[in-house]
Image 1 (tube, helix red, strand yellow):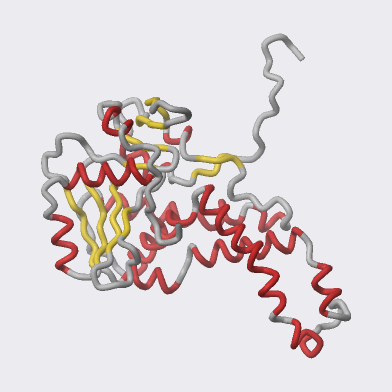
Image 2: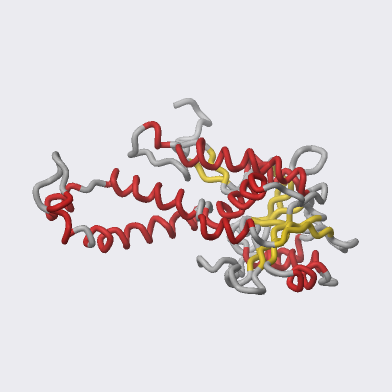
Length: 296
């Protein structure tokens, strides 16, 4: 190996962004970079990054044991389609337009649903739940296995149980991931909420975002339920179940500061801004890992 060449093997797989690049671009400056704040050890550091260079994990959405058509299904046929449609909706939101037809509302609701689950930690949680739940689910097949057995299936339930492979488990995990991120129940709830865009009124500091960009009530199905997400340094999307909740949020006198506090406290790895002006503010909060979703 030539002198100076690293002996470390590169990480495998494509970059899979769990915070979409089209979203992070709303915080970039003239040079196309935004400020990434992280806390690798004891001190928060600020680095200027292109959206392509942050909030990703290689191979995160790859299921290498599945047939080729399904290996990258989640990345290329699920997230890519959702992100492309959501990017068009975001342009309208940034122009304070929320008069959407049903397909447009569905596109944005789907994007919000993916952001609840598509992080490395979210995927790990779902994989763990699947691994722990499969034995019980398989056990439910025992009483009817013999009557439902098809030609070519193992003769007995025990043989069937032993025949399951890691490939089968990956297939089940993929199905569960796609299902929870395309939940009809949650999607219908989001679509039927009151949508709006809040413009921060002359904030001392612009709004931040993070790798946990959603601010949610403890469950959005109850009367006062809401979900909020900064969509630029000056605007935030909000969906609420009633006018009172929506007005209470929009009239918060320190709206931008409250949003920034949530973004920093609930972040897991990264907070984002347009520059490093809020380094001290972020340093006092990043690492708290506050609960941000009913799923956690």
